[in-house]
Length: 231
Image (cartoon, rainbow, N blue to C red; front, side, top):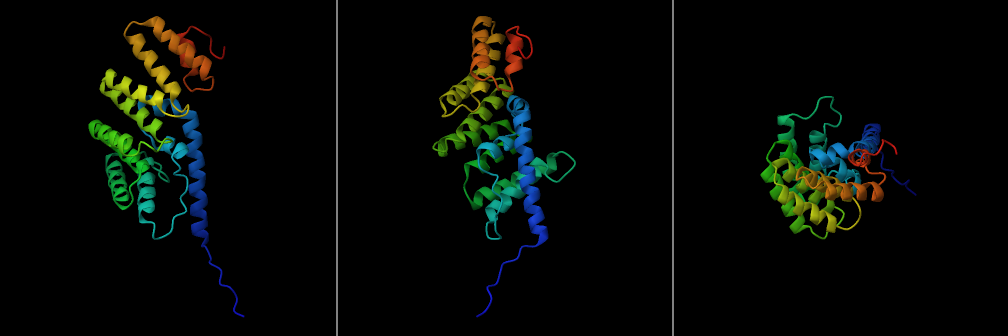
């Protein structure tokens, strides 16, 4: 009786997979620690997408061209395995790879990455159009909608369009779950404060402190309320 042939994996493939999984864990930790920066400036949705979008699965085979393209684009834009930050050329390359991946397989996650690349290239209107496409075409993808609306709000605030930002924050409020709900409170409070509506702003800061004690915005909200750090 012939012996069963076992499929062997090279050590290089094994090491690569382990390295990727380690990187994913690193990204999750960075997102948890740096969520305030990522959200407040809206510079990247990639780390958040890792946490809530399910991109941590990278065991693709040779025929899964879309996933390979997506992963290569992700590495390029996120500078994985590279010591230098992504520059204009690398961002453009990542953008093109994401587009190729989307052509191979339509995915709201890839569109979020494309929007992120647009932001990095300072093409904010294109980013907004892409995110609008996400919210309309993939409205049933409930785990990704909060991220899309947060991203829209961040871009609109960057453009100085407070009314459009409010609409995005309202949509984020209506989205299922609690993710980014503290973002709604902190951003709306800041806008009210800028408009001279200090009492209304304070009420939102208070809501954030009481409802989201583990929020990365907690100390900022407490400071606005005149509370001591850690108090």
